[in-house]
Length: 523
Image 1 (cartoon, rainbow, N blue to C red):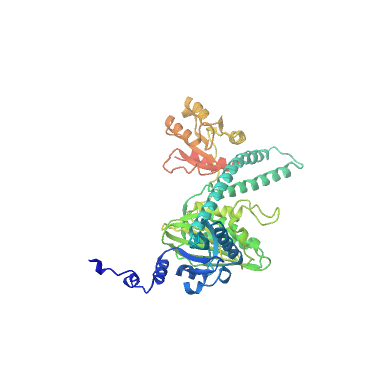
Image 2 (image 1 turned 120 degrees about the vertical axis):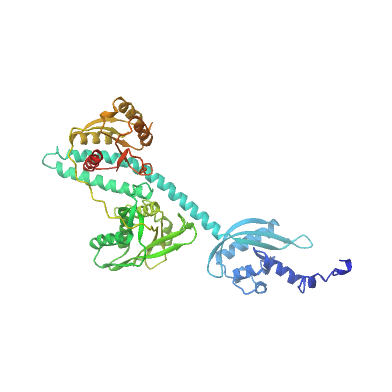
């Protein structure tokens, strides 16, 4: 190609297929992914690209010319902020970059922007206007907020779990001692006061159970459970316990309803949602409980605090005809101890327990919709296994023969003493150990003399898991009943043949005796 083949100066436009340099500039601006605009010294628009024009609510960049921010779709407070930054940039003659600011879009969506504004200088060096660019960072901002919320919930969960574990140890001693005291209390006010102690301690134990459920440290029995059956059981309980003016309507339309989880935990979650709905309704109303099939195509974040895998889910919705949940508190409703009820009317643990139970089942829960009643949406992964037969019936007590010898290992003195007193009263022989190290020293002397070991999981010096391995090394045939206040530490592998049973603290003496009898009776 020779120099004669080039267009001379002034013919650049036609060679690029445009009529003039201004048209070329506009095409370049329109092809850039950022939003672009420029203004004069009075913050009046001189132009912009097509993306910016659409965001501003006008048909084309030409429609921007001669307007200022007050003529466009922005909120008044946003308009004042934009003009304030304009003045700052033009008065200082210095650019401002990475300004994070909200902006109402023409479609009504509230967006978050990352904006840069740069002064435009005239031939005399004076500022004659500004040029601005911004990008929509709404998704990034939402993800950041969700991550902060998830971290906050996780931190609260760890705190709740630790507190509940310590409370469970204390309550175990109170419940156990009060139960044993029943036989020694005479007439008068003693029996009545003792029942008050037992009732109050049991209520406290129920609260710690809810705290553990929120922190995902409850003991969950994973079996294939028909959620429709669980919903029916919960609805039956609700129907007997709420105002008859409140109707409960079921629409169980999901074709697949079997999930892998704990019937009792799921039933408690549904009951908590139902009670929450009942409390929201003033007088007559309706609670709608429905299910449907849901397919999630790709893994990702759901409602800020859950990451769901791709797959098939059953959706459970619990909707009420109450006033709904105010926007100001929607982000806090799953926090433990947060409640809008009056003092003494609620603990603030109901929805927290729902959050924990659903989390533990690999699902998600969220408050959806706006005013006109609250609607909670739960997603739970389904399983192809057939629903299991309910096997939650307790085994009857077994008579103790031959005074079995039991090693009781627990770092909490009250628990250790109550367990030994209970078992001694039932005809067992007991030996006490304060931790795993002391237990091994005792056990190693005459391992065959012990018929079973009751082993706490969380202890100083040597915890239950390490102690279990050493007990098995000394005597592979050892029988162990493990116990703990929460189950993050105690999800015992089924292949661990030494662990015959698990007891969740706090437990009653009768529950202990039945479980230990079952351990000793196994072949």
